Image 1 (cartoon, rainbow, N blue to C red):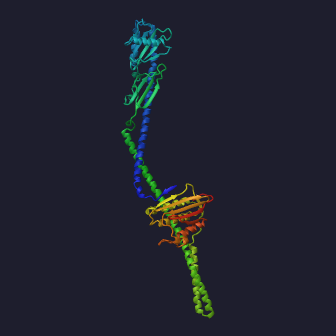
Image 2: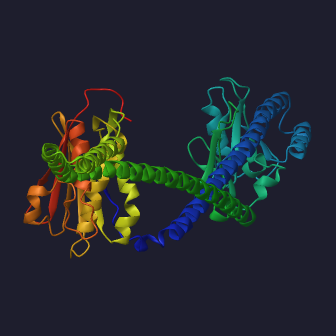
Image 3: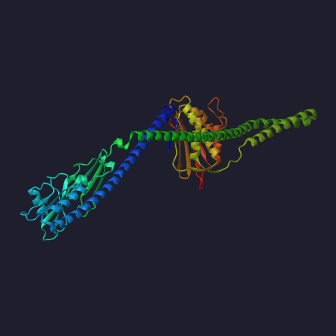
Length: 514
């Protein structure tokens, strides 16, 4: 996990606005894409629904042709074609009520006999009908005659056996077979096509428009013609202007509402984070002051014990001398000196005991969390000083048995000292690395400052030792005591450039980390 919190924040000031605009654009594009997908599915469903209705209607019409052929065949067998009056009346009635049948033909298989037709009957067409009837196996034959574009012929032998005498045929208009009262088929971009089983186009364009398609054979056993429909779909169809504008407005409102909610949530989280950091800062400050008082009391006791001991010894010696000369007034004065010296020593002892930090709550603590808290706490300071703070920590917890606040104080002291050391450095960079080595946690704080002066190295961890005019000299001494309290060690390693402090702590044997 590599993070750099020392980047100049001014380079990121324009990001939020740009990201909001980019997010809005993505939201609008996504909404329009969903509208286009919905419209495409809706148009496809409409084509499917209308085509299915047309297919059912055309299949029903085609089934009627079989009945017409059967009736015409019976009439032809009972009458002579030399007197076609009744046959002509029936044919006229069929064509009147079924306008898609625009010609009826009854052709004798013997070319010498006269033929019946409601329209022109060229000799080659009559021969084609005879050939179809003679090759019939009992089923009606379908013929496509290029000379009659837009039509197909349905031919049946009469009677329907090997003793057939006639070829009975209907000429069917493919366009009228597919006629529909639905306004859908009069719309632009919609096409219908009717084809023979062998693929010859009876009615419709040779190429259907790209877009939604429908394809199904008619449900007539004698006329399994292929019905195909298609509808071209353009961007104007997918994104109608009113719906597109409404979609853009709706997507914009939803996105702005989401952004507002996100910002409010971010502000709430930031406020919680600031409160947590403030509490952490207060705890660190309190712990630092209490421990600093302990160190100060220890240093003062150490410094004052020798003179107080000397005063006590001199007072006792003077008392003995005076006692030998029998000078009671002077003995009383010396008694007071001794009493005051003892009293001063007791006061210092009580001060030291009072200011000594109480035993910390030792528990499993994840050093990564302590490091992250300190990094957040010092983020503003590092940015103000334009210092690049590089933090490297493993992805797995680094758990030690210690008080979390004390570990944060140790890390805080080390990084804070490094910040102070970089005040006049040409390169301002602090690298903090947390890792594990076997059963030991290893924390290193390295800076690019001038390093520790050689004359201070022997007393580096002694209280009141500092190279700064405003320094207390208690930070490193306090950090050493806190680290050693939990069985760890803190040392200074002299690198080629800068300063490097290394803290080692034993890893916890188990248990959840705080």
